Length: 306
Length: 167
Image (cartoon, rainbow over all chains, first blue to last red):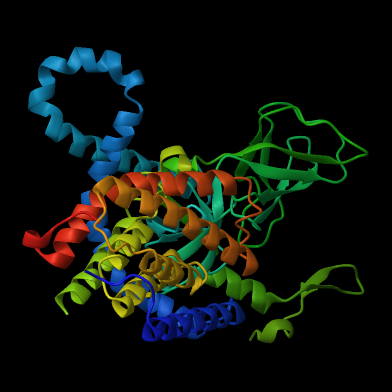
């Protein structure tokens, strides 16, 4: 029988491990945003675990599909009656085929995004893993080897904004979704009022703040990206108003806003990247300069262009 | 030695399942996932010697941190302390499957609260999120149910089939 209570050696080991954990947290916080020690370890671990996670995902996907089917049992009852006679024979095939069809339709929709974003490179990725209920960030199976860069916008198969790339490894990247605490997106209403959407750490609610509102917002008003940064095209669907939002001293501040993306059903995402030649062009070109005759030219001495 | 190796393999498997089956798009009833790594840590810690139990908690936590891309050391600290609590609450008597699950429920509640507090202190903003209370209530409940499945499996893996028993 194992003893209960702790020995001196055990207490010492506890102290060492707790101290080591604090050191890891400190290192991680201090090297945040840099390619430091902790990021190297993280990349290594993710590289090692990637094949195992992908293999596990292949086994787990049918289980998840079956679980989803159970959750939606009531709505499928009529269809089940009609298919009852065939069910015994086709049940095992259906589980596999259903998963494949969903995957196929999502991938086709992602391909259609190429027409929507002609100025961006599109990288399709599947979700590898995510944290627990306290951590809404998730990992995708594309990294710097695939041209993914920090800050790139991530959209779903309908082109709605999911979030932004927060960290990039060689073969995987971390996405910070717009629903995560601290995530902020510049948006514009259909009436043209610019505002800010901020994540609340929950999948079904974000916060909208508009400081110079010109009109109240009705139900189903759409909020789209607007001048967020160079990596993010304007006009991406971000969120929907779920209850009328009135102006209070020229300001609208409401939590009755849901993200456009259904985060509970995400399997595939697309990363929008700015082509390298376009970035180089922007850097090399430098600012426009107005000449004495009123025409404009580009100052090629800026930005180290040649 | 066999028990130590088996426990490390178990915790690796638990992390793999946690980051795939219970990840975004996976099984998350009411949008909250159970914490399988914490369940395995608690159940294994009650069957291993102290050093091994603490190492299982720490290893599981570090791996979960690395694969979830969250603050490195956050879960490592929490699961090490949860493993220590499991050691300290070890009973001299064998517990039934149900009472073992109750132990998992209580220690999971402590673990989740600790996770939220440490996360808040280190800027992960968990206690201030609107869903924090729901998660704190649901995760231990899910872990309680998972414990009925995990206890016999961990028992077999760590003690061999002939000595398999509930907590």
